Image 1 (cartoon, rainbow, N blue to C red):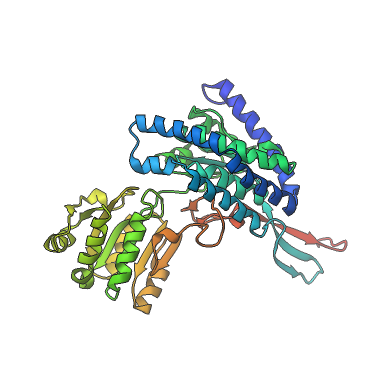
Image 2 (cartoon, rainbow, N blue to C red; image 1 turned 135 degrees about the horizontal axis):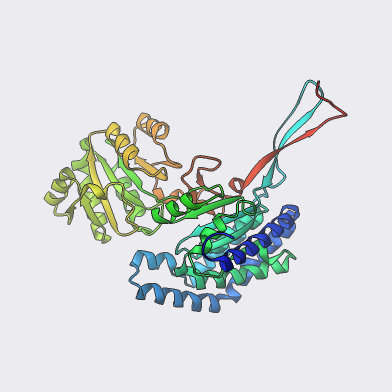
Length: 427
């Protein structure tokens, strides 16, 4: 047994062993059975709503008493509308094509062998995440549809809410005759439970940490299980020389304000020097009207101050920072090259956007920016599984191995070779 908590280690091993057994059942389950489980789980959400919202109120009260920021509380908070959205996301996953068993390629060899590549589940997926209780059921839905068992490890701030959501999801599994161990919420707050699970590479196939730098670093450093990082979103919006004022205002405001506590919210505004005098006053006024604090480099500070737009001087630490709040770093860059250099230095491989009417600039931005999503003339907020047609997402991978960007059903599978012969032997 690992570590100084032998009782906890045994408890986590037993939990993971249950997930491993469930994964074998899920791998054999039909699409119809999995879809039945998801539709039943979606129907159970409103039935469990009183218990879920009561648990969420307790989590919010505890987090508020501990001094959590409003952005943190917004990520944690559930209400009737957000519960409806969670149920809708589960139904969307049920409606998606099942990737398991799909033949992605096939060919014949000169010796008569027939070869094909077939999608199969990963097995057992461990999700480690912070105060986003919606992840509990959305991750469970994606894992079940893709034939994987999942272990859901929320932060202690969201534990009561996640357990209540997990109870609703279990109703769906029971209705379809699937084992409850197919989607388990770790029922203890002790952070050592996470490290015990990360040591179980014989039972768990993949770990996905989703949260702040400290969480990601702790998981990556302590895990014996393969890790796909869902790292912070330091997302930039670049207003090119040819950008129109109306588009610049709308996209900048939406990217920062629509939901500032999310990983795909815009955190830094870059403006082409030749367009800064034309665009910054209008964009700055709209952002200030939305109560966004603008932290500016000397050039943008001078332009906005002359225009009467409230702003403050930025520190160098404000560039490359995920605020998750109504705060935006602003910098004027010389040109597209300057924007690309800034993004290369400060980006986190998450989402980068450009507003431009220059096709050559758009194509160069698409080609040269390294990020899981490159967006042209639209908000950074569109790097989202639902918005891109994947249904609910398990997160946005900033790791370029296996999956990069929103992880939907296909990204929760791998492929195996199936080789069919007629008594063939190798010579």
